[in-house]
Every structure is written in C-alpha cells, then in structure tokens.
Amino acid sequence: MKRRYKNDIERYGSDILKSEELQHAYDQTHHTWSTVGEHTLRVAAASLAICYALRKIHVSTDTSAVVKGALCHDLGILGRYEKYKSNKECSRRHPADSVEIARKLVEDLPEKSADIIGRHMWPAGHSKAPNSLECVIVSVADKYAAIKDKVHDLFREDNSSD
Image 1 (cartoon, rainbow, N blue to C red):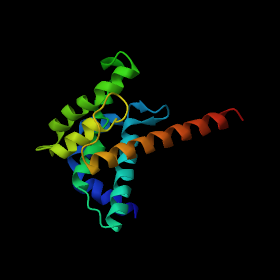
Image 2 (cartoon, helix red, strand yellow; image 1 turned 30 degrees about the vertical axis):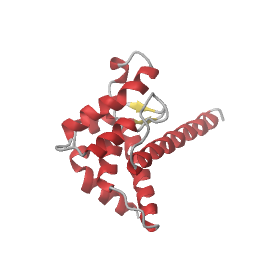
Image 3 (cartoon, one colour; image 1 turned 60 degrees about the horizontal axis):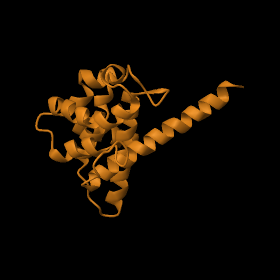
C-alpha cells in the first residue's frame, strides 16, 4: 500500500519533489516538532488515502491536482519568521504565497491545483471556501495532519517529564 502512495506522489509531483523549495522545507520547523517537508508529505499521503477510499465507492477525483496541491500547499510558509510579522499574518498570507511558488515550480499548474493551494486553510485564515471535492480533500487532510502533529507533540511533552 505504501508503494502506491509513493508512486502516485512521484508520478504527479516529481518536479515539486526535486525542487529546491521542497528540499528547504525539511529545514524549517512546523507544528512545533515536525518540518514543513514532513508535514507536506503527510498531507499528500492523507489526501491520497481519501482519494483511494472515494474511488472504492465510485467517486472519482483528480489525483494529479490533489498531489500537486498537497505538495505545494505550505511552501509559502518557508522563511515565515522573516516574511510575516505574526502567526495570524502567516495564516492569512501563506496560501497566496504558496500559489505563487507553485506556479514557478509546475509548468502549466492546473487551476484546480492553484485553488487547492489557495483555499487549503479554510475555514481559518480568511480563506475562501473550497470550490471542488479536491479542495475539500486537501483541506481536510491538512487539518488531520496538523491535529495528528499536535497530538504527537502533546504526548512528547508528557513523556519528557518522566
């Protein structure tokens, strides 16, 4: 099963995976203990899991747009402490910054992928609501991964006091 995720991520996102931006994403902490790069791959995998589950009930999704959107959704966060004055500003602005970066990385970025990236923060960050099933998938996968990261962090804190 893991091979299936890896194959789809590489098939649809190879240019993003090889990019300097995604490589730098492994150098920046995100959600306290993780990195932007690790979080990004968890969001891509969770998004694919949702797509595969929907396929089993005969609901088709644009897997290519989902992978590209998931891999680029947080690239605008890179350099956040230099770019943004606060976490609130980062929450509001990084989706648009991520779209700009994605357009540079992916030749002919599908508009659906741009929408996924630009709307992934919904309902937070004054983001527009999802306008496709694929937008909902990545937004939900992002929240799931962030919550999972935070819960992991809580257990790390509990165990560090032993």
